[in-house]
Length: 171
Image 1 (spheres, rainbow, N blue to C red):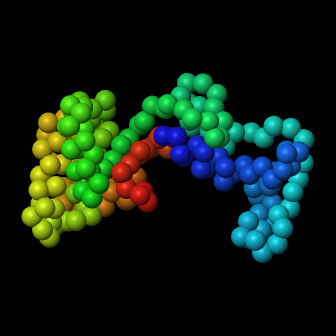
Image 2: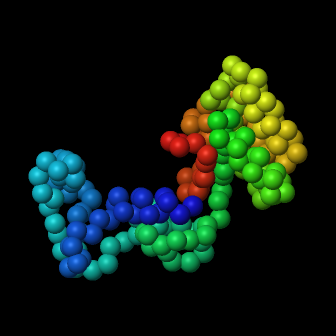
């Protein structure tokens, strides 16, 4: 829950020097590739504080106070997901720590989609690990053939303004 505000905040608000001159999103130079190094960026003196990014606004709502990009926060997570590649590792660690009660089982989704159907007995065992964890905790299980997490999580579980944390590197 920490990285998105820092990442999105820095993308939308890049400080170029100590005099608070900023690159402005929406300027012609910004969209014509100045950030790719083709030419120097157009710099404007904002003359005052910049409004909040959408990421900052979402985090403010979830943290319950004013936050800004780069700040480390503890935020309420709306949806969490794991898939069959990294999920079994997470489940085994939770079981080892005896942390098997979920705060929001109806908003915790376990996907069997990356190695589906299982091509080796080790992967089949990992699928069973996730199935058993879902039964034990009440987490939602997206079975083999029900779709890939990258799509299904957005179509069914995530709403605008939600914070999603996932164990898939590019979701």
